[in-house]
Amino acid sequence: MVKVAERVEQLPPYLFVQIRQKEREARARGIDVISLGVGDPDQPTPGHIIDTLVDAARDPAMHVYPPDEERGMEIFRAAIARWYKRRFEVTLDLDKHVLALIGSKEGNHHIALAYLDPGDVALIPDPAYPAYVASAIFAGAQLVRLPLHAEHGWLLRFQDIPTDLAKRAKILWLNYPNNPTTALAPQHFWKEAAEWAQAFDTIVVNDFPYSEIAFDEPTVSALSTNRLDAPVVEFNSLSKPYNMTGWRIGMAVGNADIIAALRKVKENTDSGIFGAIQRAGIEALDGPQDHITSLVQLYRRRRDLVVETWRSIGLGMKHPQATFYVWAPIPQGMHSIEFAGALLEKTGVVVTPGIGYGNHGDHYVRMSLTIADDRLEEAMRRIKAVGQW
Image (cartoon, rainbow, N blue to C red; front, side):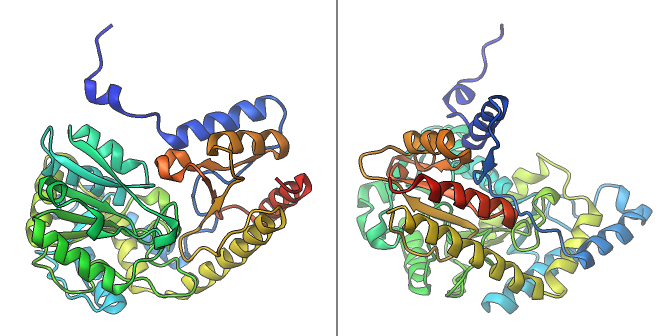
């Protein structure tokens, strides 16, 4: 048997594959499983976006390699620039500062390939979305985890990063609104991030796919300072606000040199996004946005149900600020895998152990709100029936 590459052997088991395996095993035992493990919107893509896709797909011109395949169609990039101007008062040159992506996850992977050589230092928060770790491993980087703490609002404290480490780092991954902790980052945080990035010549990445899912305060873009000279880049996606996870369409925006490096990786990796999907993406960004308000209201109602249930079983928690997740504390003295296993056995409800996001997540579990109301209500009834933990 041919030995796989060392980088593959270094990859930790992908968290959500493990969760799906646990679900299959429980169903095989006859358990009526309700999964709150994976975040995939249960609401339909808005009809006007689908109509645009259907019309565009009938155009024979859409069934060849898309124009500007390595950076995205000009009309799509222009729509991205317009959207950023409307939403965040950020002014982008569509040729210098904007790149189409096959989802934001691709951007995170490609920036690692663009900038990390074997042995380079990559800074990744703990807890954090697991894909950042995998991307750094593929590039052969040295990973350093930076702890996030509830008492600091799950915000990274730049002053706590040792100077010698900051000088060696090539990339710092951030993700606000945050998965899994649901935290928001305010304007002054991004000003500090841009200044830190310039001071240490380190790329700051903000993974921003939950930009439109916030409950009480508006989200702030990492580019809101309009310091496009700073080594800061932001990845965003149409997946969450427009219920388009399967469409695989997103964007990278920010510093021109970083965008150019990403473009170079992409032009040697893929052939772009299906043109009809890009046209539908324009409709998503430029078209009616009222469904987002309804979507946030839906997630808010589901969030409140989960919070009330959690408090009823003696596990106090604050209301999540953003995203469609709940980051829920578990009983003292338990580990997250232990608690998730016990919850599955007692209730048939699947949650994500916080340890999957890093050691500092081990006292929490993550629950997704992207499940039909009746199933979420049933899950909460089962959890309440267990009583105090």
